[in-house]
Image 1 (cartoon, rainbow, N blue to C red):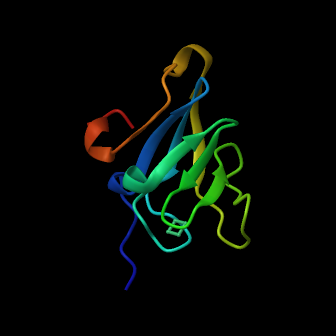
Image 2 (cartoon, helix red, strand yellow):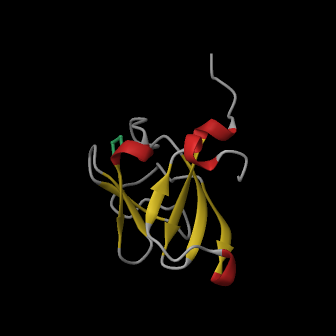
Image 3 (tube, rainbow, N blue to C red):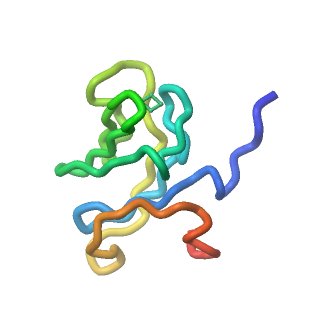
Length: 96
Ligand code: FES
């Protein structure tokens, strides 16, 4: 039985002046992107478990097929933080 999605299933990603809400678990094999996610230039999120890479702008997997990532742009420009980082849901406390 599938568990319903909750805010705990999303991470917040800050990359190149944009802020994204991203599905926390990798669409490939379900690893926690809060632990295995790595940001690359070009607003790309790499899952270090098996090194699949995802465009934060489209969610599309850039080196595989059939496993796009659920991403949503939630801030840019003055609304976005300038740092590059991945926040866990527990770091976001009522701000998502
Ligand atoms: S679980 Fe993320 S690439 Fe395999």
